[in-house]
Length: 112
Length: 114
Image (cartoon, rainbow over all chains, first blue to last red; front, side):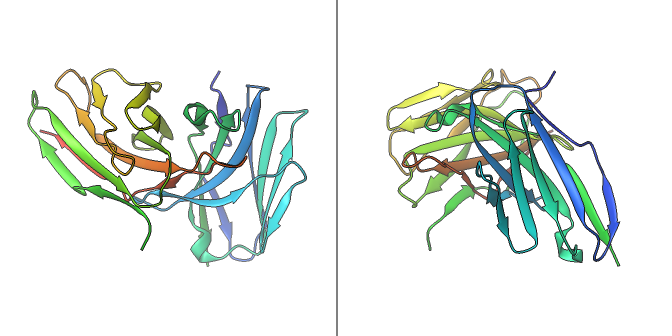
């Protein structure tokens, strides 16, 4: 089993739709969680950190469920520009930089 | 402009040759990382460094080597011992201060072995 697993996708949704991605992790000592966005043939860019209490940034909401060991990303009112691959990242410990593990990503295509 | 630069953007290498990928950052970050990404897959950690003159192996270090002589620079050498080196190579850096040490990435180098 992979340390970090994501919904396989691809997700194809119409503009304006709400879409949610999940990411499960296996190491209960994981401390830090992030969602990154990666456009085709580009580098990943930080979308948002995931805080224990959950956090929202405009149309994006991230949640953490420690008991079930998963994080989620909800995108409301999808835009064409949201089309990308979304990577979840899990870090074990808050200063052990070497233990960051990336999921394989979920591809989202938003269609007109 | 603060950021991470990688060069070259595209690199072609003949089988059996060593090649070095450059990574420089001016963000004053302590930690630097090298990842490899294959098509349709996530990032896999090759090496990382948290301090000058020290570095650690990641999950797939075989066939690669690094150095960290300066805080700003973390070059990666892909040696002839790497069996399947064609991939997208990404360098990243992060601060080690605070609790949320998100990583910032360079634009990447696409290496093709002919």
